[in-house]
Length: 164
Image (tube, rainbow, N blue to C red):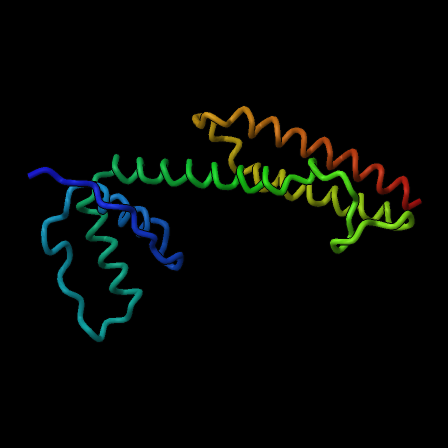
């Protein structure tokens, strides 16, 4: 009997990462023997039931499959985060804005400070993924991070010079 891969199921975010990874790996690997865990008591608290089922899944699931599922999810997160930063990249903006309005001449220092903070925030979002050098877009990620850090420092200096 050949196992056909099932489509990935979105699990609620409240589950611990180990449980989510185990469930995702089990769904993409061969079906588990029935039952995986004994049927829970109907009056048992939910955290206890989830802990028992996670322990049973961890015993049955292949560690290599779990690691592959984690690596695949991390790659998807990296691409999504990189796309989100590129879509809202403060480096591409041409007009200085404050609260969706063009900044007046007296507000230029404050607008530069806000854009500097946005560059720093975007760089911080990317910093967590700089270790993922196995990803094909890693070079683009590092280059964007460096540009954001440089822009943050330059804009902060400009903002402070205008504020004095």
